[in-house]
Image 1 (spheres, rainbow, N blue to C red):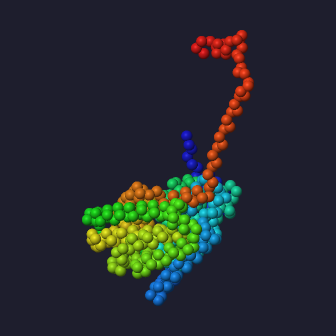
Image 2 (cartoon, helix red, strand yellow; image 1 turned 120 degrees about the vertical axis):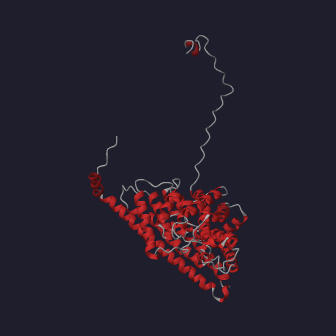
Image 3 (cartoon, rainbow, N blue to C red; image 1 turned 90 degrees about the vertical axis):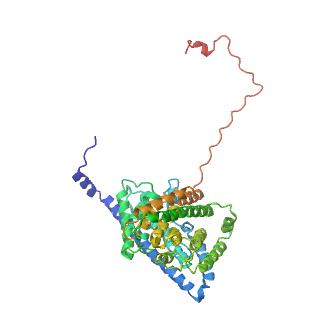
Length: 475
């Protein structure tokens, strides 16, 4: 029978262990530093995209046909030359680092302080190029790299594992990027680690909240896509909401399947060209993205936050084919190899689906359908419905859509699972397969040497009975 905890004894033990408190202080200090790095990255990315917009609005926008290929090719060259582990979203890298199959000496390939700073600079270059990327996925890798660096300052008997630091760092990146600490906690459990270590769960949550507070302190409670004012919903919104959810589930599943196939299946002809001529491939793809952006009047450039704000305001300057072209631009931007995420573009595509359905079935509930589309498409792409639901819920004023957003995210994720494997886990396993050598197959046992042909077979001694005959019957 377990004894009741002794409060005074436990309190005395806690304060006597000064090294443990020093380690906890180090973790919280690095959590604050991780949040500040995400804040700095946000400012860098916004400045980069503002510079791109000045290029786009100069001389009728034709300059982007030269600017985008040049900057994208340069960013890809720098990434491949100096920081290959920074390419792409950043979430698969953190998941790969958490895999126990990865040797501790190989973790620096995916997560390190150097990669965090390189990710900030190179992803900002992607924003300056006008690519359809987001900063939330890179924020996960940036914060995880900063938090993992705290390990070297711990005592020799510290109970804080590298696993706990990586989970705290990755979730802190989401919390600081979206100004939503709750989303960071759920992301840690749902995407990075199915459960938190009991001995350090409180410290992990404290680190996530502290990093989120850094974002709130810098930008307030403002959402990246603004605040969503939704009307009171009735049963009349059930059919339009179901249409939005199913459409986002199918499109999100197809997007995840297409992107995973593009990044992992090397025998495809285009992937062979990408592998042989990565810089030329990046320039050519960036030119296609530039043409798409000009066709849409600039709506597909960047993360898409301005387009979403226009949809929520009821402005009609968003093209009807925005969803299709934003889908293509985001896929190409992720395929090209520049550091950048897909969270924010996925929210933009989902908003476009909701906007289109609202135009067909009733514009009076357009903000609600846009919010449902954002949650549903993000949940379908990431197959992390709770994280998607909470991220969008933080954008909605009031709690009138809690159940609607939750149902949309769950249903869209279920539809996506019928079409595609989990995107981030697939990419993480692909990265691990390129680093972790497969275990060698066991050598076959040598065959017994045949007896010489000239050797006569042994003749049993007739005088002595066989051994079986020495045993009693029934033995």
